[in-house]
Length: 320
Image 1 (cartoon, rainbow, N blue to C red):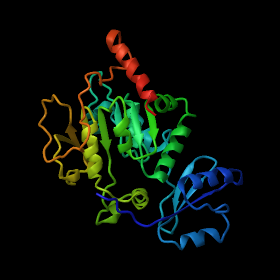
Image 2 (cartoon, rainbow, N blue to C red):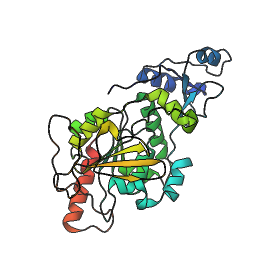
Image 3 (cartoon, helix red, strand yellow):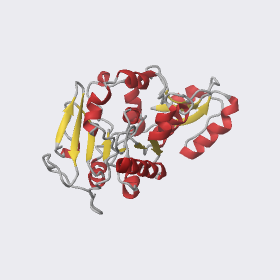
């Protein structure tokens, strides 16, 4: 299904004259207009006249997306060190939280995960913190720039840097490109498609409304079909608790929390779970069951398990 997106105006700028060249290069890379003197009184009112106008601002601390207007939210950026990501790292419920259960984290099993709609990387970071190797794919160029900036800054924090450098790999393109070429194939593919706008806009956080304007809304039916072809164990789709399954494709089972539901589609060839119904996989090479896809426990593995773990970790680091 095609993506529907509100027409937006995004201008790249900076708050520091020493960063002008960096901001100019970013604008060129993203094919966006560049405004050198954003703090000049005449600039913001001129940009603000454009409906749904945004600034992508290079500051001395981080890259920020700022929506203009009196009711606009605060700046949007990626931060793996503090804020909500730090809170989830400390108090998120560990391996017992619904996301971890949906992915299949249990015992000594740490699956290789492709987050095909990475966004700002929050769920991917949780999975990496819990021990999974995670590939992060984001096709929207502006959101991908925010994510990449957050990953780079996280490398400066001694506690978070090992998680990011050893278990997270960034891919700033459509995940389907990676699905066609990734070797080894991901065991789990995770989809968190942009939810459709709700009738009561107050229910949607201001930050999410801004991202909806940037990314647009798509049911990602084709992405689900491609994921079902590629994943060797399961596909997990994050949905609002009362929403229909993505593409009317009935999941094998679901794990629910108060506001969120994780629809799980088991794809492995030999499974005791109920088979997937009403789903078509993308035509092409079929997914095969890889008997060596399981990542053993990071610590304490030995013998053949240790050799397999080392081999797969090296392969993971070569993927991108």
